Image 1 (cartoon, one colour):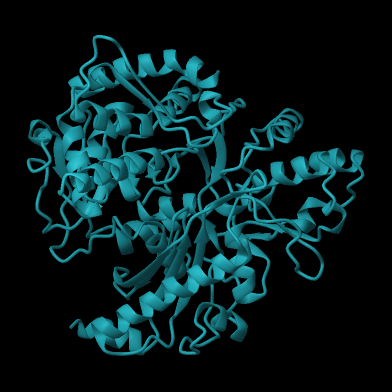
Image 2 (tube, rainbow, N blue to C red):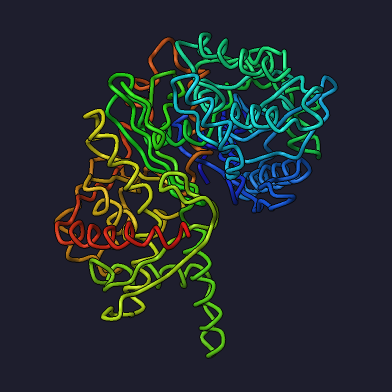
Length: 554
């Protein structure tokens, strides 16, 4: 038993980070060494209802209680004590989307998530009039589309927020978001929403009979390191109905999954970048200077401490791959070879690592929902192969992983050409990078840029085990302490816990400096460089992929 962790928890000096992701709600408790010491999670799924992807607010509460309850059970099991007090809490969730409430805090229309692509008209008008790319999933686009469509509840709107902003309000009574989260609601400038652009949007809304100032509708904005309220009694009961977790805890500004990803991968300094891969996939590159032109495939958001950041966001990543793993698992069961999920995924990734570099003529599209980056308006998963292709399981598995990266690769190629800004290395996090090096290596090949992921110093190198021995020369490891925790699977919840700790410990330090000195100085990072043959093979795959997009669009 870790005596230091026991004392930290008993004294109420641990920090709690919670992130509501697309398929999992994760809770992570960190100690004074800023490493995870306990965790919990719960599963949930979005639903397509009346043409909109949504989660119910009941599911939000149940999922949070389940994740926090599992974390508290983990504390009891590991350390033999109850988790009653923490030093700080941070809430994160998938960015963007639309939650509209009336003056009595009644939800006016079901939560519309980032996954919805029903706001094309609004996004196009706002982008043109504001001179700034406003993607369809941004909160401002959802609000303006609702006004354009004259939805019957529009006149009752008193507050508009995101999922992270909603949960933070429930816990503290404060309508606040971090600047990274705010930058996915509406463009930011300095430490707040861009006032000139806000006036332009207000004028557009007024022309449609909507006379409220968006700066009063949207939550207020705070930078990382600031206190954003304290956990109320009702907020504590919302998280833990057993009454064990005590109120009075300070909360840091809530952030989106982009901000927690940047924090969890130490990618908040200019020219650093990270890539998150799960239900969706997105890349973040902290800019040396603002973009000089509007590019509809590239979003401009902010780090948790307000630095401009280029984001390429793709709606589709792992869901289609997951579906095929399930299909192969069902087939295995039919022939009496039942296997658990971990075994199935390990076999799938191991096969992909052995596939031909161009997938042998096989091409896949993973579009379960629309994909604006490649101008696909409707989700239609597809698979095709040329008549002279080699349809092996290895080639098929590799094509599925390539398809998860293809739209992102197309979007990211626009940034260096347009602005001559690129990352020296991309730090990876998310479900795809948890178990083996395959996805990380194939991503490096696809982007032509080294990729890194955090792992334990004592962790066994699995390259040979998954058929990547030809890439062993490409692996570089940064020195770290032998007891560093593996936090790849903790992801955004760990990043959010770090932001809570930064609120308490920053002492005026810049976030990037604090992360360097206090968090990442002793952590190991496994770096994989692009394989020349792999990159050439991906380009051949991408050529077929681009040519076939006209079929998908039709």
